[in-house]
Amino acid sequence: MIENKTLSSRVFNILNNIIMGILAFSCIYPLWYALSLSLSDKSAANSGLVTIYPIGFTLNSYKEIMGDWKFFNSFWISIQRTVLGTGVTMLVLIMMAYPLAKSKKDYKPRNILMWIVLFCMLFSGGTIPWYITMQKYGLIDNIWGLVLGGSLPVFNLIVMMNFFRNISSDLEEAAVVDGANPWRILFQIIVPVSIPVLATIVLFTSVYHWNEFFQGLVLTTGETNYPLQTYIKQLVVNIQTTNLTKDQIENLSKLSNKSLDAAKVFIAMIPMLIVYPFLQKYFVTGIMLGAVKE
Image 1 (spheres, rainbow, N blue to C red):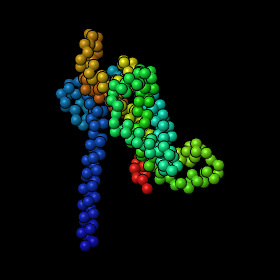
Image 2: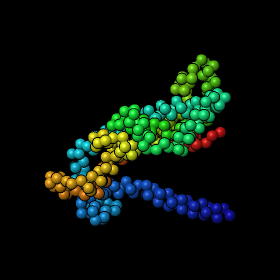
Image 3: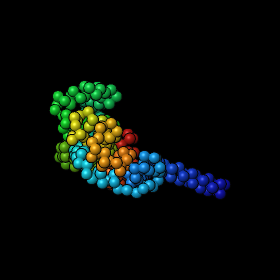
Image 4: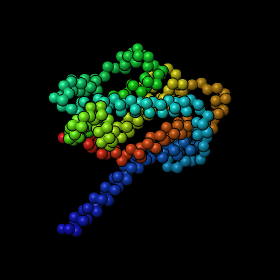
């Protein structure tokens, strides 16, 4: 009987490792493929011969990017947007989640505010009213339009609110006895013990701001104001449809659209790949504690 259980356990572990290996490969391969494609020559990229390793190794795509000032301008705009957007969003979420985590007895407008937030999450006013509103506030071709456009993600608000609910009320009661006001309780007690959920939401928010392209397409009127993902998306269309000059044709004769786009996509992924390892250790803890309410 014990031998059967041991055999079943080994079979399960083998199958589990195989499945996890397949899932890991499916996550890593797109990144590896983009790198291989960006390092391949024009004929191999256009012929679809690149699979696992570069064919006709060349750095022409990266050399072209080094001379593309628009790419680095959009890169800088995305950095500003991500830093400012993450900071503003975290401040809004913390200050909104804390009172909403209280009961109706402790915070009377709680239910009304929650209904408003959930209604806005489920029913959008549409792109045109949203654009008109942003225009009236002077947020077109403005970095703050990109920052404030998604500064209240409701899902993240609910996760943070549930995490705050799970914090022992004894901490707040002790702080009140010591004479602490609500601001001090929030920023000196609640926030420090909420690092897991805060780190998780920082990751969610920074990835959102870095990868989002639609708002940049709607709220900006020229390439000089595009964030990175909007610029990359428009680049595919521009290269295929815009009439190029003779000099541009000569410069691009040794390049493939596919390898050039892959190089830009790979460079665009690097900041998130650098940030993620520092935050991933909080990811599971933050999600589990923020998703379950006592």
